[in-house]
Image (cartoon, rainbow, N blue to C red):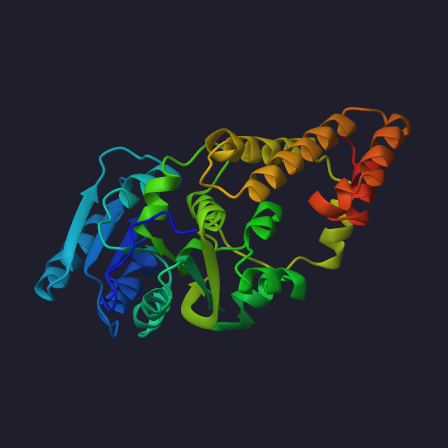
Length: 336
């Protein structure tokens, strides 16, 4: 369901790139160069610097002059006080004016045809609300880690099948799949989504809203180099067997509590919105109830958990809204 205004037939979508920076001088130059090297240039670039103390402000001011000389509108915000990356991105997104809004990290490198290829998907499919792409994982020096982002996500065939069929909303309720550095969305998604509620990161919130009111697409091509280094705000790494086994015994009530906070925020905003499909609103309500029950289970001594766990298992909640038997085992073994 596309809640935005239809684009005139035959018209090409314009692009706004939203780049947020903070003490990013080490890698920023490569990213900025890659934006100007696009085979199809953006109409607008919004840069919001979150009170950097290194050379970043000077770098983006110099870049703004070059970009404007190429005919690109540049909106530059040099903040005097640090907002934090979620608030900084949220504020910067409000300044984007083109029909398609691209999120951009300061430490990656875009491949030359990224804008062209992603915009082509939006032009070919007016109902598409958000698209995200694969990425080549690289180290701090730009060397390949011999793995793609989609491979590192370790999604199963059923999850990819749901996404590719335009039914990503249930998948996104289970876990964050969309990496903001690879994502672009319609401007109406930004209008619908902001402000970002507590417990959510801006990119996963945008993707969830886009999937709730429209549909999203995965582009199975690596269109950026996604840099993994010690300074990432959010990175990605494959989990080891040892980490997975230890996870069974971890205290999880705080983690489940955050999941409840996130789903409650989504339900408070859109749980009664008639523009959202009734099936999605019902799924959200049932998943929220299941996670609240799991928080309650974690407050009980282990022997006292069994009746509650059994009741959730009997009604199929672990299979529908959790990870099946692995969630049961976690609820039995976890410390609290």
